[in-house]
Length: 340
Image (cartoon, rainbow, N blue to C red):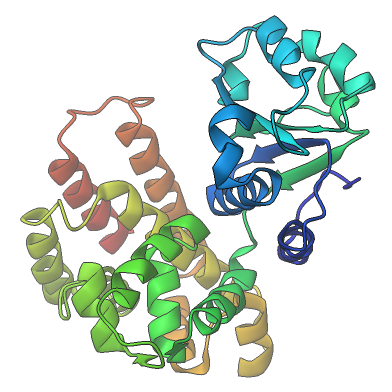
């Protein structure tokens, strides 16, 4: 029985157990990191039913359309021509009267594997039916901490038979706002174009992920760090003309992460480069850029920049008044940061 909190180590252990054929009668899979959830569900499916009898023993329900009575009735059946059957409840967060599953959870059928798939906002485990699931295997797919992502991705790349340069790795992580599922999706594009055993270089990330070599979020951050107005405007004009390759939410998330790290650096005056790099989770070749930004913006200005980014997010989401023009909103946000 899991504790209900996740880590990359717990994910690896669960995947190892499932691959070895150790399958439990009930799983609650919930949380925000879809990469973990999808992989675990896929492995449960592989380990629970074989292809020959899957049409009889693999049952999938969707929360918006299903009712709990049907789910329970199916789960209490015996498998056909097999040792186990699999019952998967997808989009469980939309299921009405979900508490009716509690009676089944109190006495699950050993030959049934029930997966309660609840992605996104996690199921509260201090209220029904979450309290009943706590007696079984709970995996809460919490997003990795930003500092953990590079190491996890490096191991993932190695597991696929590739290597990756440190700068290329951090470029990919920053570009994807440290979201594991997004990074893996982008890496799939790279793998599809490189032979196994290849080293993934900066040029590969630019070419196959689609990052413009000169006008990208990293060159924008660098120009903002130095308050190079002409360079900022040059990059901004390019991005405004290519919004499809530069989605506003992604740019905003990356800028927020960047300036948050600058704020942390400012609070670490007197610390060595090694201490700062460890705290921020950045490699040595980025330290000078962050120090430039920390000198160009004082603490009050950095706080103002973070507020500007937050307002841009609220406007994009329609919480604050906005024209609905993403291009205009991007231009407004960057120019306000430049003049903070």
